[in-house]
Length: 338
Image (cartoon, rainbow, N blue to C red; front, side, top):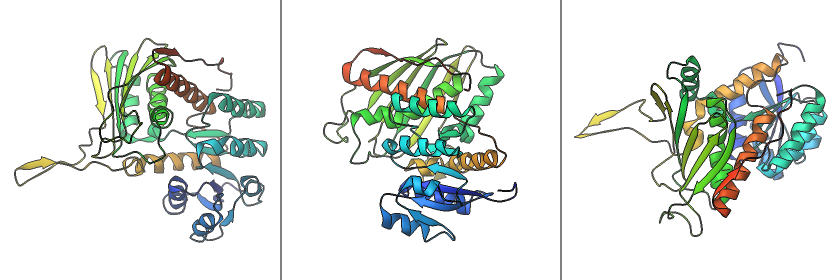
């Protein structure tokens, strides 16, 4: 592959997220094309591949990764399938962008981390797309200036209009709060050391037996306290908001006031209805950065360590939800590569 040749990407998983990434690579991102798609549903894979010139459909990830026209891998399959795909990619020393979670549990995440570490260089970027959102990037830059002083607290709100039918109470932490887990570590530059989960009475709009909403509290090794309201059946839309309280001021993002209308005695704006709409620009930016770095022979962005740390925090959070009380986060010693 020459420097000017497009990066030939295999996309594993052609559901909502994977199909959107195929579209993004073909229509938005420069310097890459989709050469293969993989899905256990053969017909779905064929349907997606048919929309892309020169794209081959597979049902087996390992077979796709062995193809001569695959330079890099984008993993957008379900979380439990990530470990096998990641290990197969690392065996071939292929660059990977893996949608979160890296893997659903810390033990399997650690297995992936060890496989990458043995290569002696990074190969995996984890898809924590909020790091590429314009508002979050601006907040991160402001905190790094030190103008507001040390961060003391962070308040997060994470709301969905409705949860999918398969969603469980544990998944509010492991699948949704996973984003606040990563963004907390990234914004503050601190590790999360303990998690507490409080259980308000469930909303009448929540499915039976779903503990929704939840109130999650993180403690960090830098002495900050972080709270997350996770409410996945709020009914009115998709909202992600964050406010950092520092020694000399505060900063808040996510109010969604890009445009406010005034008409007929009312004022207001629109509320996104799903994460793909709210973070469309972040996904575009994330993929372009990944493609550009990969073509340069570099790996940037959230690392395998970040994926492992998020899995460990979420495990502690699920324990706190089910057992009550404060649960400490257990992390291995951070390897030099990360």
